[in-house]
Length: 277
Image (cartoon, rainbow, N blue to C red; front, top):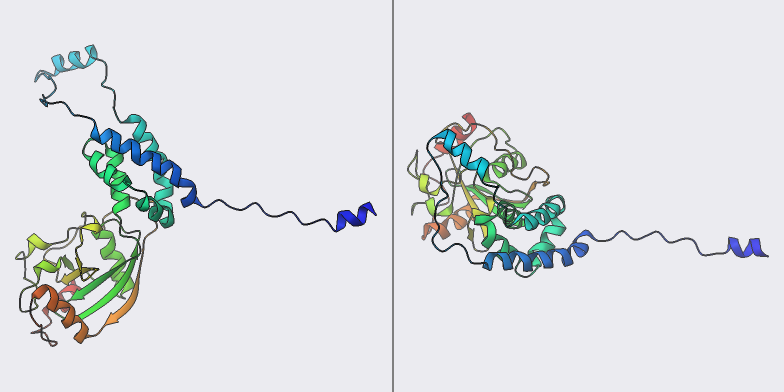
């Protein structure tokens, strides 16, 4: 009888795996409060530069005579460093962190005096699960892309080119403000004020109509190579949502141009230049 009862016993339930984002909420909430408190602390009023000597021997003697200055943010930096691996590894945790009240603002406020806070602010600013519209005005072609985990413009360039079927292509990337009233991009260095440099954060790409817009033109110079990511542990993904026909590209270009843009461009000099680069 005992053996039969044992056989009928309920099976052992597997231990549920805790949700990483949910588990991080209490820690991130406390971190947000402490970062905000540190950012509100008054800074030295007079901002005197540290004493130094041009004579290397006297400067070395001064450093030896003075104890090293304590980092006022050392404890906070350690806590931020402990959260960074999970923030880089999981987009869900990044979404949860952005929803923590005051965390992004506190990290940005403390960033000038705390490198760890600057890293945290940069991670929270990464565009996750956002739509980017990429347009080539000279060819009237374009794509809508879903982007996740891409921190820099240079990394986006490489992943965008691969996702759209031309991984060897090189372009000069512009903000929408570079577009002229005729729907064309400036040539050479004419639009350098509106270039998107490879080292720039991808979050700097402006939105037009709720979606971030990047314009592609022929490269003004030969790039040195792909820019290494600031956060190598962050999985990056760019995939095509939609291919835009010339009519829709012209409609999209009309917004930053401020006037209707013809569907047929004047020419296609940017296409051959981009493929040859």
